[in-house]
Image 1: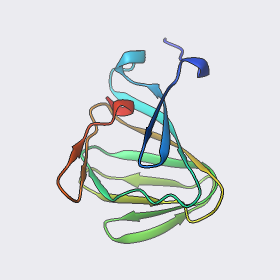
Image 2: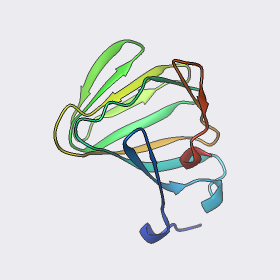
Image 3: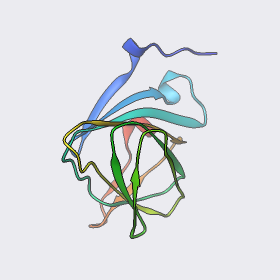
Image 4: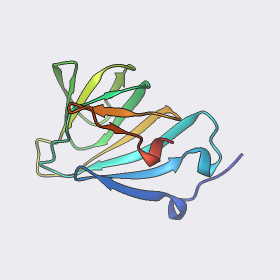
Length: 124
């Protein structure tokens, strides 16, 4: 059973947020990817449609998620299930950084409104 130490996590930054990657094929996971997302206060990430299901669990702070046009406010301890094909937008409406734990299948891609496809390295 591989163990990924906190000092071995890989940090990525995109759209004003940090993605601290722990579980990927590079660290020994065969099917799942898992990371901690850090979303600074005032951040509004662009909407994107995901190709794989994602589970987002809010650890600290407040996040506003819009899933296929329906907005939800998450508080610590809340979990959102984002099914494949869902359009997701994430916003932190506060001044404090929010942190969440995210898990998905390896190979997740996201498509932005302009058609740009992103293969996030923290999920592949």
